[in-house]
Length: 491
Ligand code: SIN
Image (cartoon, rainbow, N blue to C red):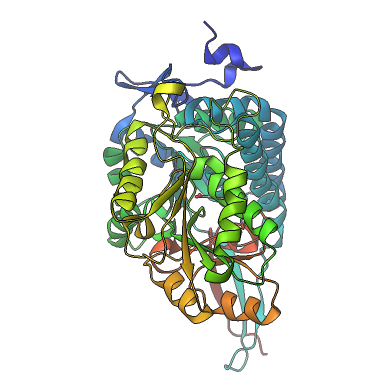
């Protein structure tokens, strides 16, 4: 039987203990990590719990005192080395992602490269954290601003991007001079621990970068109640984000939250329908629909709805579902069986309330031996009260709605507490402006199905979060702006 270690070129990247203060730390209690693709057991990972969280935060607090004062050029060199090692080991990191999360290997490797881009960008960008000199109203004074690292940052990261959501937070945090404690999702700790091993090899001083695994409640409580922690970065559900925000409020900690979405994917009647159909497939089926920016409500202007559905159906019928390690597979499993049940419940509810299932519509676990769901296309008419229109689907289910007017499209698209990403396909320049301005979302892709990149701001409004990751904004997020007033300048 091939083990996960056998699949790796560098088996030393397979770690099962937490990384605290430059040491691998085990625990008596361990939790199992299983592969959603074939239900095989991958590893037993140490649960270091609240005590581990306390040691990691203490270590990060001590390390910050030196790291925060290191020259940014020195920090950038180490951060850049981490980036280079990540790319050098992209095959192994991709293998770990596919094994523990399920996404197809090519896509997993793409995630590694995407995530590494944030590390590289941050190493460069931190050198440009400039202050300003200011005019002051008081005679004989001068004023200026400086940007300083926030301090100890905790990053709580999700399973859908087990690698990129760590690098997107930690690259800028580390480059800005913060020390970091990462708590990965229990489903996908192996990618996080491999990144810790690469950080060790890159040469971060002990305590600057820590990864701890285990009980979310125990660790989360320590992280949000510790006085040493100055910032909580989180990607995950809106429900957990609200809880963390409440817990962080007592210590008035800074929060950066990238939460749930309910993305409208709007196709206007003047759109290039082939490009729009390609866009639907790209946005909807990446990570089997398990992304926060995935097309959740496909809103077609009524006149082109049939033509769009025909094109999407044609493309969906060609999608290959299976193990992420199998060549040619485009859709891997969902993260676990409960996810399959949740997605199926949404589909059955929509069907029961009159929506038509045009493609798929059922689990594929029995045929494929893992947590699989068939790529599914639903025609939901104009019924925006369905649960599927109001929940984050997080699965390979495309639900199409027909709406007549532009005004109604904007109103319906905005009728959600979420505001992460929205997409619009149109060739009318007036519509580009009206829609991109009218949509209450943090990111709008116009004739573009993907919005994230190392150079651009990623984040939401309303209940989709606070703060931005990526670009100069993603680095600034990990700094405090300090004002200095100097008096007694005049003789
Ligand atoms: C997410 O789903 O949380 C991230 C998606 C992305 O970076 O594109």
